[in-house]
Image 1: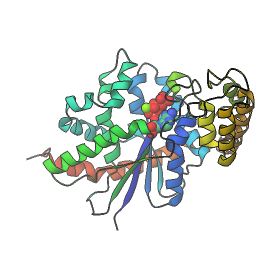
Image 2: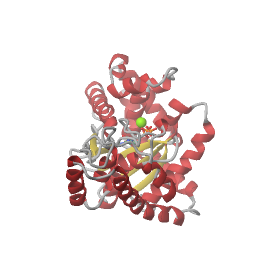
Image 3: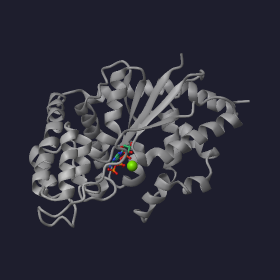
Image 4: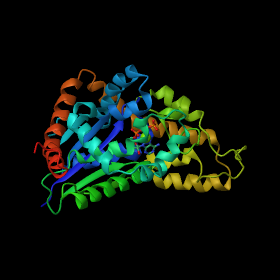
Length: 339
Ligand code: ATP
Ligand code: MG
């Protein structure tokens, strides 16, 4: 039987939000609990520098914030198959990244749709940013089981925006294997039911950088205030007006988080016919989100005194151990050896 590995991660650029949860963390937790995979969860501090190099204090604080968010939602690094890896602490990863840069082509990276969208929001993108789709390929394959076996699996649970990157990571693995020799198991993306959660402003994606998020660490009062200010259907001015329940962020969140989906669909029917007010709808959502977040808040408090340093040290060490045979094989195949 082949070996099963998960590599996935988050940039350490601030606290995590509901989008991170439905897009990624929910799947991570399910995979962790099923116990079939060796899980490497990456705190991507190097990738955070691609956009935040001018703010190192934010980055070091965010390593702690993201780690606490992960613990709070139930990821458990005391399990033998779960590792929290700090990206900068695996030096072999830089080497693998530099070597993938040699077989990646500028023309194909620049065509990547996610990169294109993100570049539009940045006037002075760093070289590191432009190259991140390739750098990320090294993250994935540094823990690739080596030597490869037939049924090995490298699984990458992510939100929808990451899918083009993962297709590219598959292409690069195949290119390497065809040019040099069989080192990599092309990775498999795994996207959850809600691949992309919209922001509270109704914009395409809930995002730290867009200031339209509800954070996993928000208090009950903050959640209430944010939900009550949420964008709904601008044409639903009076309670009796028919409303749009499909492109309405409040309904999108109810569909993602409300345990009673039957009632949500009845409410949606009623909203479409007219007769349901936005305030009532939002009150329901406040309750649903605070019920969802309460156990997360409690678990966060329990971990207040946890030794995060040793969790991260151990996890990074495990990734490093896994990366050594991979990078040695790559060096051999690319003839980077003393003659
Ligand atoms: P932000 O845009 O909030 O700054 P980010 O996209 O930089 O966050 P990443 O670290 O790149 O955060 O993303 C971590 C994971 O969370 C990825 O798998 C990404 O697809 C997923 N993700 C982030 N935001 C959302 C969202 N709004 N809906 C679904 N998945 C999301
Ligand atoms: Mg991102």
